[in-house]
Length: 252
Image (tube, rainbow, N blue to C red):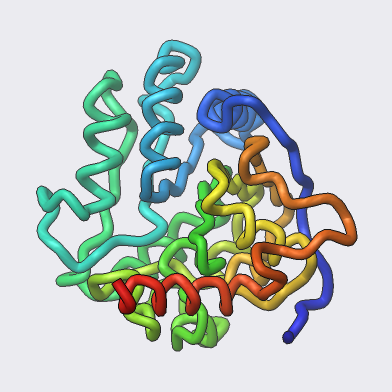
């Protein structure tokens, strides 16, 4: 098992990840360093709950001062059920008053165009990330070439080499994430427990490689890793666990 240098970040176990995320965004907005606030959004079921919770607290943020960007997107139409743009619009943006600016990702525009947009933006005030059962974050999958993008590349095209996650993607790179003033991971559910344990133990999965000025992990009790000295499910690494799940699906 390959290890990274060390776990980077603070872990906070909470009863309600979505509600805690909303409070983090509100706090980060209040402490922003300039007149505007840049938010990079994510996708997935946990993110959807987080954005619904944030929409419920919408009056506590001056949304006309917020610039919204995407961290990754599937190469599907914007109204496709798999689209992160659709998820964020339905869970959050459609419930807000006027937002300062909105910058969806589009695979048809290509990574260079979005990379130039991010470069012009400068450091993000808050980057929201999730965690997949295989340890991926954004659309940075284990074994993906996007993980080794050059230091000048802020956005890359990506695919999951294992095939577990469908659709070609466009994603921010580790270099882009490292520009953030604050990264907030949200992790919920027992299905993420092995992946989280792998990250906290220093196993080299994509989420373990995230570095930024400040990294916070909001984790619910179901996803909290087992006590020190305990093994992950079946005593295997998260990568082997994912492979076992694939074999079980094939057998059925």
